[in-house]
Length: 385
Length: 72
Picture (spheres, each protein chain N blue to C red):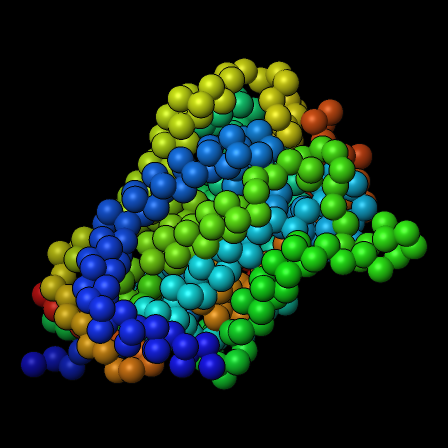
C-alpha cells in the first residue's frame, strides 16, 4: 500500500516537472557534499530547537528523547523526563518516506537480533551515564559545555575499541530480505506515538494515571511546539536517509579507513550548532551549571566508552539506527527497542546520571556493559564460526 | 584472462562490505573484483572506497541486488 502511494506520488510529481528538481537535490545529498549539508542544517536546527523550547544543549538528543518516550510510556517513573518527542517519530517517518520514494525501502532482518537488542540496551545505559548520545555530546560541546570533552574522548575510545574487533573479523552475520510488511512496524509505531502525543490518553483515576505520562517540570516539560518538532524530525529523517549521516560511523571511517566522508558532516554539525548558539546567545562556556549535565569527568568518559563501543559493534549511531529502522532494517529496529528498554532500566535501577552526578549503580552498570560488549566483540569473530 | 574474484557481501551491515572488499583487494594487484551487495548504501560505500584506492568502478543494477565491478 505504502509503496503504491509512493509510486503515485512519483508519477504525479513527474508530470509537474518536480522530479528533475528533486533529482538535483537528491544527487547533491548523495554526493560528497551530502553529509556536510545534512550536518550543517541539522546542527543549526538543533540549536534553534533549544530556542523554540527544547532543553539546553538538547535540541536533538536521540538517547534522551528515547528515554523521554520510555518515560511517557510508563517504562520508567522519573517524572521529570517523560514526553513523546515528535522528533523521533519524524526521524522514522522521514526516513521511511525517503526510502520509499528513492526505491531504497528494503525490509531485512536476521543479523543477530538478540545481540543487537542488548547492544542497544547497554548503549543507552552508557549514554545516560554521560547524559547524552553522540549527537548531544557534539551539541554540548557546541554550546560551551566542556564536560562534553571527556565524553567525546570516551566516545572516540569506545569506537577505537570497536575498530579493533572489526579488524579481527568481528561481525554479526548476514541479514536477509523479508516481506515488505515487516518494515511497516516502525513507521506505524511512529504514527501511533504522534496520535498519542496529540490525544494524550489517560485511563487512570481522575485522568492522571497514564498510560501516557507527561512531565510537568524538568527537561521532559521543555519542548518545541509539536508541528515544529515533527517538521524538523521529518526533515532530519529525509536528509540523514539520503546522506547516510552517522555520528559514530564518521569517526570509525576516519580512523579505520582514513575516509573523512562522514566526518566532514560531524564537523559541519558542530560548527553550525556553535554559530547558531553564539548568534542566539546560547553559548555559555564552562564546566559548572551546564544544562542537564554533571561534572564527573571519569564517568562522562566511561559512559561514552560504553556507548561508543556498543554503537560501533552495532554499525552506527542511535540516529542512524532510527533512520535505518525507517528504511525497513529490522535489526536496527531491535537495537532501537533495546535502547527503549535500556532507558526504562536506567531510571528504574538508579543507573542514569543526574545533574548531581552518576546514579548509585551507574558506574557498576557501565563496567558490566563494557564487559558485555567486549565479550560480544570477542565471541562474534569469524574464527569462532 | 583471470576469472574475477567475487565477494558476496549481500546482507552484511556497515562497514562489513568495505572490510570484505578491502580483504579481496589486498590479494589482487590488478584484474577484476566483483562485489555483490544488496543495499544502495553498501554499493556507494564500496564504490567510494575502491575509487579512493585507485580502482575503476562500474556499477550493475540487478533489481534487488547490485554488482560493483572493480578493475585495475
